[in-house]
Amino acid sequence: MPDSIKELTAAIANFSDRRDWQQFHSPKNLAMALIVEAAELVEHFQWLSEQQSLELGDKQKHAVSLEMADVLIYLVRMADRLNIDLLQAAEEKVGLNAKKYPADKTCGRADKYTSYQEDP
Amino acid sequence: MPDSIKELTAAIANFSDRRDWQQFHSPKNLAMALIVEAAELVEHFQWLSEQQSLELGDKQKHAVSLEMADVLIYLVRMADRLNIDLLQAAEEKVGLNAKKYPADKTCGRADKYTSYQEDP
Amino acid sequence: MPDSIKELTAAIANFSDRRDWQQFHSPKNLAMALIVEAAELVEHFQWLSEQQSLELGDKQKHAVSLEMADVLIYLVRMADRLNIDLLQAAEEKVGLNAKKYPADKTCGRADKYTSYQEDP
Amino acid sequence: MPDSIKELTAAIANFSDRRDWQQFHSPKNLAMALIVEAAELVEHFQWLSEQQSLELGDKQKHAVSLEMADVLIYLVRMADRLNIDLLQAAEEKVGLNAKKYPADKTCGRADKYTSYQEDP
Image (cartoon, rainbow over all chains, first blue to last red; front, side, top):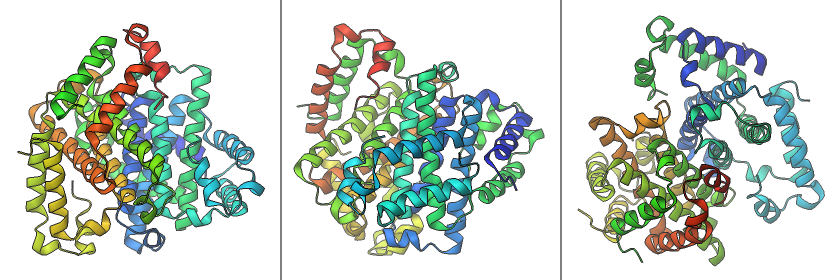
């Protein structure tokens, strides 16, 4: 099992290289492929209630996990093509969010959360 | 820096808990938030040529990295809420893809690649 | 007011021509722009309950209407660029759906509805 | 053939009523369904060049037209559920865009166009 993003990145690059698919993997195209996979994830939940979405059966949960894998695969591939360190970017973003949504002002408040939703 | 998906998962769970946001984080809602972030990523590339998408300036590349971080954050949060092991799922998916797209039949062939595109 | 898709198509074509934007309006790019607008629509609803989504205040309802307009504008523009008759396609699709989901077998059944959801 | 958005709205409402599907058609759920259809449209173009996306064969063009129909169907259904006049909203949005992107300042300028892309 790839135990880190780095190993996954290498496995996917090797997979693409052996098929000579790098020519299709521009960031523009990969962004499209990524959102298509994200939509296949959304599709599982579109007619479920929020509560139902928390109580998936084993079969659907497995299908959902493979859709999430697809999103991760394209995300990792895109980061590789752009030479971006995904985990470092995530660390930076978590830090920015901590400043933007101070815990004492946003704790348990749906309105605060909602009012912030349009910020990136 | 979180050096693994596991650490990132814990950091995001802690962040949400301190703000009492778990109530909003149903998989249904998180899938919506994830695709919204994926679209913010797509937006950076919509009017660029494929070549331009490979040659981002530093400022835009940084902005793109933060959008990718947002996708990863919601993906990791969703996996946590559904008790899914993201990296294990990715390993499984890479294995399935290797069987589905045999390297000797798909090497360097855009038509093969394209004809496969509608498979999940 | 444009009282038909046809008038809207002409207004948007004229708008684009006056700005010499046709060069950017390949179907590939327009599909990206369309999904970005669809995501801005999704963003309004991501933290709302289903019931709340039915009870928007006037201000949010107006904002939602403008996001929906953006989706329609790109859809109409794309149809124009591909020489597709949107309303004729919609008529064809409604007919196909009527055969696919016979009213007597799907009436009031969430399970039937859900089981059909992965069909196109 | 429905010759207007109004007729299409009525046909879709009738279709849903006969199947008792209104219970699933909250704006939140419809926004999810709409973006899923938008992604099926994106999928057709993800590995094509911009030029190829302008030169679809008859079979693919027909498939694309039905995906576009799906987007329109959910858009029209959502407008109906929210009591929004889609064409009026589109007219308003075209007017707003005309002010925001003055033709004399944006004509033929990719940079201008791009710099505006993050505006709604």
